[in-house]
Image 1 (spheres, rainbow, N blue to C red):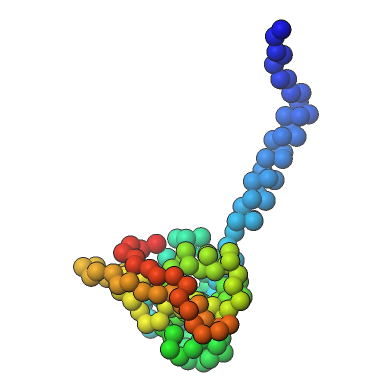
Image 2 (tube, rainbow, N blue to C red; image 1 turned 120 degrees about the vertical axis):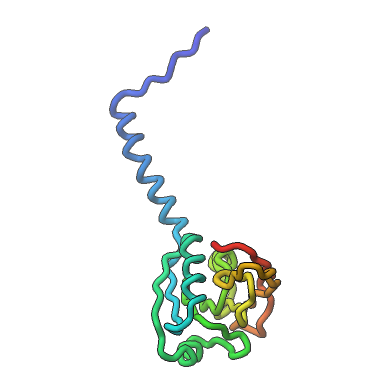
Length: 161
């Protein structure tokens, strides 16, 4: 009792070929990250490095020079105690400071009830704050907005991207 080879006629082959790109394109759109808008002081250099980190991790970023970052932070509800040098907006959240892309992706996946994430100050070794010859600091990413700020994650980075 032998098995017959599977034979596909031209119509089936063309149908499969046509469906392939549609399925793949659908997956790509489903996995795409939302665009991010980043506001920064035009004299700040580390902001560009942080944006490079975001782009290397799949985010599409628009960078805007702001004459008054204090006004931007006030408008977006960033607590003064959590302030840093740049402020982003993505997926309905505020991203303050040198937040790693992985933390932002987790925020977007989990969708907690909060205003956003912040890395207060400018910790050495955080994305955009890599300093050659300096040991990276351990720092907290804070979730803020719905209640008292709380630790969303603890990081110690030592590489760009």
